Image 1 (cartoon, rainbow, N blue to C red):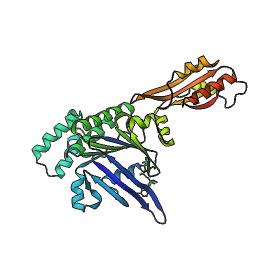
Image 2 (image 1 turned 90 degrees about the horizontal axis):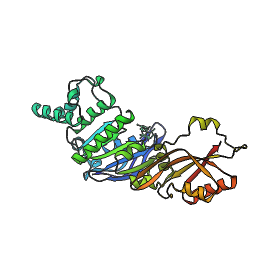
Image 3 (image 1 turned 60 degrees about the vertical axis):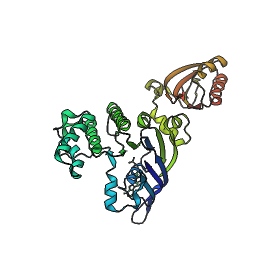
Image 4 (image 1 turned 180 degrees about the vertical axis):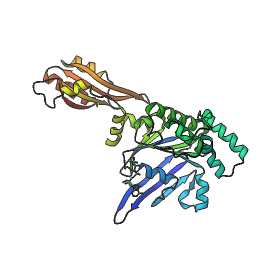
Length: 343
Ligand SMILES: Nc1ncnc2c1ncn2[C@@H]1O[C@H](COP(=O)(O)OP(=O)(O)OP(=O)(O)O)[C@@H](O)[C@H]1O
C-alpha cells in the first residue's frame, strides 16, 4: 500500500546541504502497521512528510496503492492525498471550530451534502468515543480527547493510509495507551494501513507489526517487531530496546556505588538478555556452579513472539575468582554483562 523506492531528501541552505534521507526504501503492505523509530534529527519527520509529498523527495519514488505520487500534477496529487490521512503530535485542530466543526471540515471541503456531513460526523464521534463533546471547543478538551478529534477528522474522508507523526508524544502513558488502542482498532476495523514515526520503543511494541530503525537518514534495520526485539542487530536498535526497559538502580545503591572495588567485593552487574541468551535460570545455575550468591536488585523481563528478553541488575556476593567466573559464565550464554560498580 505504501512503497518508498530509493527516496533521498537533501535540504539546501545558503552554502550547505543537509542530507535528511538517503536512499530509503520501504514497503508497508495493506492493512499493516509499520513503526519507524529513530533519535532526534534522524530524519523521521522528513520521511513521513515525503510519503504524502508535503516534502518533495530530491530523488526516488513514493507509491501509494501503486500510484506514483512523485509523477503526479498538482490536481492529481490533491486527489491522491485524500486517500492519505495524517495526525500530528500537536493535533492541529482549529480552535475557532467546535469538535463537530473540526471533524466536518474535510467533508465541507469535498462538498459533501449537509445532511450526510451531520450523519458522518455523528458516526465518527461515536467511533472515537466523543459523542458527548460534539459542541465543545478544543480548548476545553484534554490532550487525548484532542487527538481523538484529530483521528475522527482524518477518518472523515475514508483514507486508505494513515500517517502518524509522533501522535502520542504529547500524551501521558495511560492516554498514550488508549490512543494506540484506538489506532489499532481503526487499523483492524477498516484495514487502514498505518505508518507511524516515534522515538519510543513502547509505541512500536504496543501496535506495530513491523519496525524500521532510522539513523542519520538511513534505514539501518527492519523486521517483525518480535524479531527486532529478540534479536536486535544494530547498536541503535539495542539502545532503543534498552530505553524501553526500566531496571533502575535504587537511590540507596547509587549513593553507595564505587567505580573501583576499594576493599568492596560485591560488584553490581547489569545483565542484558536477548533472544540469543539463555533463560534467566542461569542465575541459579551460576550459584550452583560457583560459590556466589546473586541478589536481584531490579529487573524487567519481557516476552515478544515467545522469546524472553530484558535487563536485570544484580549484586554478586562471593570470592573474587568465583565472581569473575560467574560473569564469564553469563557471557558464554550470550548475556551482555556490564559491571556498574561495587558496593
Ligand atoms: N526544512 C529544512 N531545512 C533544512 N534542514 C532540515 C529541514 N527539515 C529538516 N532538516 C534537517 O534534516 C535532518 C532530519 O530532520 P527531521 O526533522 O526529519 O528529523 P526527526 O528524526 O524528525 O527529528 P525530531 O525527532 O527531533 O523531530 C535534521 O538534520 C534537520 O536539521
